[in-house]
Image 1: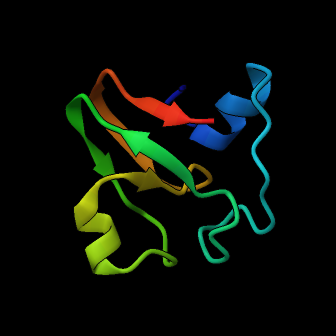
Image 2: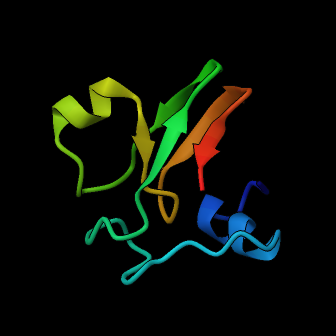
Length: 75
């Protein structure tokens, strides 16, 4: 994922389309399961609750980021 590219854009470009609606982190439609390895999910959405952010098991790829290695997504 490029510095100025969303995870959603990178997924689409690599042939893994994700259902989305707003592309700004409001609707939650693009939410995908995430399994961070050695790193941290950076939640920039306004959809998930604080508890969902803390669980670190899903990501809103249109606005959120990952800092680290070994991120596995449920696509």
